[in-house]
Image (cartoon, rainbow, N blue to C red; front, side, top):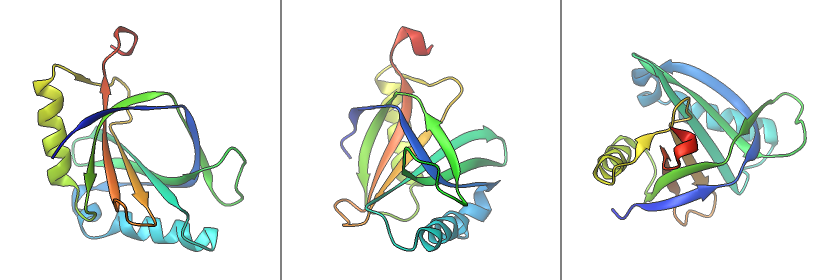
Length: 145
């Protein structure tokens, strides 16, 4: 795996929120959330963004959405600030392994977790090239610490 540092501009997402356990996520809760969003949109968008906050001991919060500056009826809005991440391509499915490798790379490079989150961004591409890009959000600027 080759991890690259990626800068993300601020973006607004329209989508659906979920909160649950790691076991529920492993049993398909996130996949079902993505399918529900696609059903509400009426099509599979070019890119779906997944945003995760690991802010509870038994699970996490997750938001899946599309970039949209407009309010989309039936969907929640999420404004993300500019972020930095360590990023790597992933074949899709369970991303536990790739995120573990990204965390090891973060620690080896002397980077830190960004205070207040989000902790991870998943970038899912419809065309499958790559099917998913995993982004571990990091703090590299003094203003983030």
